[in-house]
Image (cartoon, rainbow over all chains, first blue to last red; front, side, top):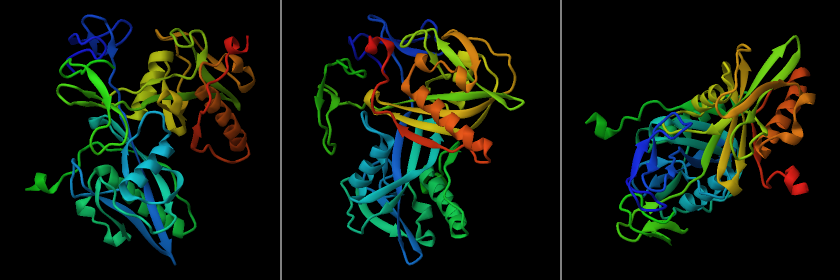
Length: 193
Length: 193
């Protein structure tokens, strides 16, 4: 941030009165420009048929992480709820008809100023189709998940938590809400090269 | 938003390519300025002694809602987790030492582009003191809560959910995670006059 979005004069970092951390403050009109974490919201759409469970993933057609697999998710918009955001992103990226379940995971990604939320979801039918931000959409059983080609650490963590819970559900337990902090970026093939 | 924070030229509302809603876009450098919901995070600090339970509330020393009662909460900052934000706000507003429990409530307040999160918390001691944003800090049993003088609808809803759960806890149940949408602003004394 270089300039005030209200009056176009330069901003400077300063600690406002009564505050305790530096903010971008306009040198002319004094407007304080706060910067806060963003919510990324999505779903974990599941198709279950005769005890065989599959999870829907989308292969990204956009950067970052073009070509890698993700759960349908994206930045929450103003004037919508988290549940509405999860449904919208699932429609936009996978063209999928879902029945939204409870919030399943909240993942803090503090180093990129994000909080990711994933809802459980049930696919109502198999009439899905890749949206403009997806190369393809596919259903995967646990052993078929492209674990090495997942787009983000929050996707890996959410899927791991889901399949762990799933084993408890089979034994009569239930899905629980999980909170988890992502403290290190996921290593990629590029990092390992 | 009137001007680009990158280059100081005017912005205009336009739907970027591949997008489906109007954004503030710079007429010179093309930067898209997204606006997204903010997270407000706080705690519900509880002091329990010989079966007598009290909840900590703070009376606001700042606008909006100066003089009204709130749970300690505030805007989440970049580079922190939701749990860290809840503890920080409780320290800043109430000077309270808490042991943070699980996330208790997520409240969508779509009409003001906010998501509020409240964690359960246990007061470790009674060495609390009003911070700069609070006029006073006080412990209240359920019947003593100043229901008519609460600052925000999310505070009322969180307290109602808490005391309802509390009755189940006494009967052997447990606190649960709650998601709730706030669809109408709370009516105030001023509205009723």
